[in-house]
Length: 154
Length: 112
Image: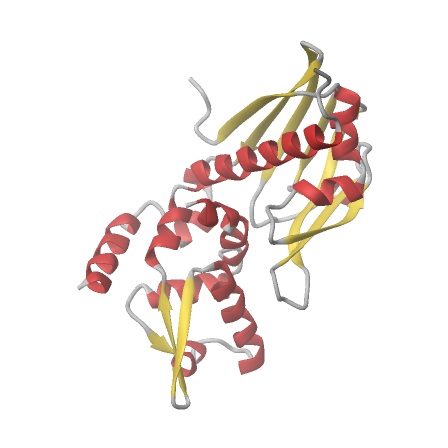
């Protein structure tokens, strides 16, 4: 049984782990792919060591200010092999109450001259999340949307 | 659809705030003018307008002005996209992984 609040993405990348690692570990590289264009990404903190801060911000097209995006803490870092970060803590293991609690486990494995890159992302059980309950995600939310769609389509 | 995935990060960010979630909840009951939307909140109109602007940027709401009254509407399809949040998280990470691969492979062209 897989945990319903966990997901795994993996992909073979045609470059050795050292190159993929550089795309992750250098702010100017991370900024280029971390958030989809045209939203602009700014890496404020990328302190790749256990307890180090991980802060990215995003700016919409035409907006003046950058908005919060990720504010987390690295838990485990093995160069060219592994990065683990969480949003439940911020820099220096400071407990936080993020809008989206997650732990991401990213691995870089050499394979066929390239890299098998995998992201395993753990979330709280959605059933436990007061934020989703508050939004009514589990109580007739779909019905409300269907009704609204009907209303607007008339 | 691709466009919708692009902005999912902003949808979740927009839904991260209790004031903004309350506005969405209110708009589920139908469109409403900004003035009436702002009434329940103990904040100045400029601060409230900032929240509306985040919601509008995310595509969760749209607004139109008629005379001096600006009315907000909910975009139900965008909300539905955020509903199945785990599959949306998956889409975000999938997109991220694809962009990482594209970035790395453009830096490191495979030798034929």
